[in-house]
Length: 249
Image (tube, rainbow, N blue to C red; front, top):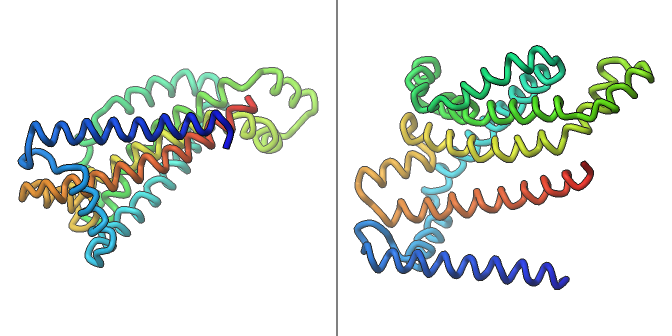
């Protein structure tokens, strides 16, 4: 390992240790009514992972997250690339997308339940709604920020619109688009969990809601820890890819 990698690993370990100490300190201050200790939470989390009753809920959440993310990516790319390719459409569409992004999505959940009912379709739709707008905004901005020299070169070469998009627009916009994917993943996960908490009978969000109803802090903290570890792991991977792609811009 290089000296930089060793130092980065050391910094990460120090940060984890400090967070663990802060967690333990809060536990000592607030008590078991509000928190569980780090060791107790880690022990119960490991028990949940090996429990056969836990896996159906985990699979339900994972399936809903994947479906919602795919829908958000496809729809976000379609909207963002279409608006970004046309200057007037982008100028009109951007404030509309920003306004939609600022709306609390939880206010739309009764409408989603009316359309999709309680179950998988509702939480997939709710997750997709959270992720689609940031992906569209980043995709639109990526197309608008492409160096105009690339476009003039393509026009001089008389490339077709499809060849222009395939060989110039999309490759040049990939770094910014991937940043939108990274943000969209985090928000889709939040939307999926919220959908499970308020309109589902399976999934990690449902387990959290049941535990909150019975004030089972051990289960609440354990599931929260697993979700944090998963989101951090995926975010680190996506951030590494994001930084790698931006090296070429």
